[in-house]
Length: 336
Ligand code: KG4
Ligand code: ZN
Image (cartoon, rainbow, N blue to C red):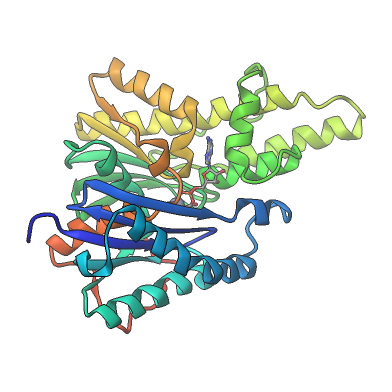
């Protein structure tokens, strides 16, 4: 593969329209993210139809800006990459259609990327020397999984959530407390001034590397409703701190156990919830105690962005996988 291989990547799986230019899977020349948060906040969550319409409006400018910021023209680009799943079908369709059009009109290769492999690759952009094998905890709005990353294109899921994803649970707790969307950062901010004094439900001891968040979510909701019924004040900060501690402990305990059981000396986190300060801090601390090196991605590569897709695409293309043609279609339920 030639040196300075430039990939123009597109990400539109949920409510962020993003385009990036990435060199050799490691250097991010541009990473434009047009967020629809302000639009969806009004509805308390992402409205799929609204999201796809806004992707259509934004995508052309986002791509132009990404090229401009990278100081490139389409002639400088070697391949086009796009997220084709998992995600909202209408949102994915916009990115996939645009990427297919671009690849066809410029006669450049098209690379199809799994959104979650993209999240993992966000770490390759942050740490230029990071190479597999490692254990990765993927925590986003749609996924929670512990993965053995054996090589760039060889992933083995060893644990996953049996019900809700971690991010989904943060969002739901925030919604019930009236904190708004997206809930993760809001719960985390409130937690800074709270006490971890409420036990909603017991830890899940029997699930091995798997997670269950729905029981805890229901316990938090019931706790709030009971106080409301009695007309008692809701200790919002304490609820946030106690819930966050429970969730982070679950994630960290199981991830460290996986590292020790499978004898890995590197641990990585990925996905929107990896922006959570407590998770970043606690995982690092526990990893250090156990002689494991912990990698947490730059904040810009935690939540959805196209640069991570460009990095994953580079390693897929190099290995001859993920090469797509004009029959490429979105796969909303694409698995890991
Ligand atoms: O990866 P992402 O941007 O989109 C998906 O692929 O789902 O993740 C979004 C999720 C949301 O549930 C959001 O509340 C959560 O990541 N999130 C956080 C934080 N920042 C984003 N959760 C906890 N603490 C945060 N600081
Ligand atoms: Zn994501």
